[in-house]
Image 1 (cartoon, rainbow, N blue to C red):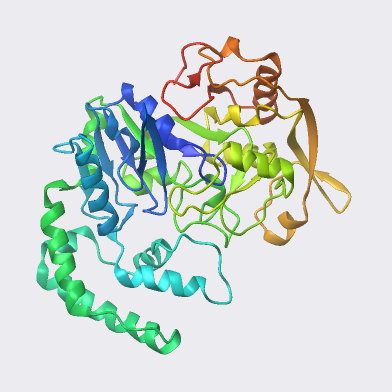
Image 2 (cartoon, rainbow, N blue to C red; image 1 turned 180 degrees about the horizontal axis):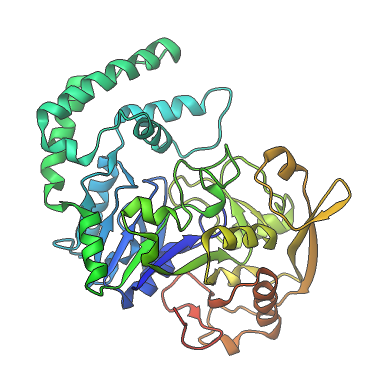
Length: 428
C-alpha cells in the first residue's frame, strides 16, 4: 500500500502546503483529514502566491484528485470563496474535488460564539473561525453535516432547533444580538445547490483507490503539538493533527499508512497563547519574525519565534511515527553569528529530555542549548544541497542527529524550486 501522511511536527505553520504541492506530483490523490478554515497553506508558483484554507494543496497538479475528508469542519463561505478563487486563476476543479458527505458544517453561530468566547475571561488565542464550537457540536451529536443539506426538511428542523439553543446563549449569557433563523436556512439551502457536484462517500472512494494501487497523500493542518489529546492542552486545536488523525478523519485503516513525513522549521514558531520554552523576546526573535515573514496566513497575527526545540521534535516524532523529515526556512537563519538548538530542559535544577504537556511543568522548563556557528551567505539561490555553506550543512546534520530522524529535504525559500535534497533522490 502507498499512503503517505504529511504532518506538521511543531506548533503549525511549518510549510506543509509547499511540501504537499511538491510531493503530490508523484501521487494520484491528496486528502485533507482534519481542521478547518483556521489553517492556511501557502504555495508560491512563479510570481503568484496562493493561500488555501480547505482545499488540499495538491490541487495545483492537474492529474490530482483532491479530497476533503469527514474529519474536516467546513465553512461554506470559505469553501465557495476558495473554489471561485481557484477557478478565476485557471485551476479546474471539475472531477477533481470530492467532499465527504459526513463532514460537519461550520454555522454562523459557531463563528459568533467563537469570537464571544475569546472575549471572555479565558481566551486561548483561536482564529475565531468557529472551529472549536463546530467540533463541540459534533461531539455533542447536534452538529449539521453535509449529508443533511440533501434533505431540506431535516436541514431546516436542525437549524431551528440548534439556533434556538445558541441564540439563548448569545443573548442571555453574552448580551449579543440573536441570529436570524430564516436567513440562515435559506443561505444553507443555496449552499447545497452550489456544492452538490462535489459531495461523495469519500471513505469508500479512498479505500477502493488504495485497494486498486493508487498513491494517496494525507494532508494535515496545524501541528502535532496542538493536538487535542497530545498537545499543550488547553492551548490546542480542536482535532487531531497527528498522523493517527488521518485514519479517523478519512476513514482509512492504519495498516494502509506506509510513510509519515514530518515538516519542521529550522527554528520554532507558535501562534496564540500557550507555553513556548525556546521563545526569544529579543532582537534575534524579531529578526526571525521579519526574515521569515512570520505572520499568520489566515489571521495576519505575528507569530512568536524561538530557537529549534529538539526535545519537542523528538516527542512529535514519537507520536506521529515520523519516518523522515523536511526542514523548511533554513534560509531565515542566514546572517546569524550563532544558532542554538534546545537539546534538553532544566527543571528545578534537574536536566530532562522529556517534553511535558502539563502547562505548569512546561512553563517552568528552561531550555538547555547547544550552540553552532552561523553563516552570512544568502542561500536562497542554492540549487543543490552541496552548494550550501559548510555551517548550514553542519546545522542540518546536527538537527538530524539530535532528533534521530532522517532529514530528506531542506527548503531555502518559498518557491517550488527552492528545495534541496541532502541525500539525493528522497526515499519516500
